Length: 326
Image (tube, rainbow, N blue to C red):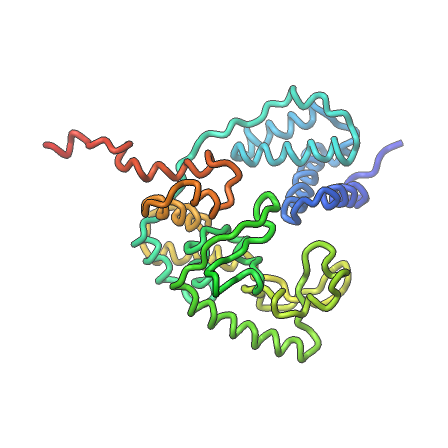
């Protein structure tokens, strides 16, 4: 009996999503794993994964590295998705895991902007994208963490921002810049007016995390749960058919930031995450201890934060070039 192909039956992908949700993986990880399984199946001519094993997984990973020339992290991400598929969804004993070669990560020094460069780039941005970029630099949060902030996560009195369900599904608290408060308050006032008009029109809903919608059915319309950066248009929930407002998409800020980098004349391969690198680097330059920076960034291990200490050894570990004495 021939097993159905993935494109003929959604059962395999549905099972994959169910197992990921059971283990509380993020929605982004869920979508990523599904895409890797689809690519794996297409790579092998739409054969069902249960018909394949170590040799096919190894060939796929080799193809990614040789033909696709993907990074080590991307290759290992694909491997993680396939191991989850075989171990948790198909229930196969993946004893051949040890035979697979994992891509080796090479250390990379992050791109960091000087304060003048940050200022120049932000000056080339306008409106909500500029506010979001200022928030990323001023708090050190990741782009998606910033766009998924809710009104209740900002404490203007304590000058704190609580990041909910950050990387690794962990919460943390970071600083709210004093200089950003007036612009952020004015922005939230405009968002509040928009929300009031939506509620008056019978809308004004946002998605709630987990099963909160069952516990608090009306909380999805409460002001406290609204997105700080709501999307321009409403969205229809494919599962429930309910009309709701999603948060602003990452591509809106990414596109505006790339254009600002070009207009500013900054000759660095900077992107939105560069603002997070710059936040950490500038804190260390200002004399803050690395443990404080680690907590603000939400790094699980201080060794991850240590990469930013390269800025304390300017000019090749502080060495003065002999060319400067000529």
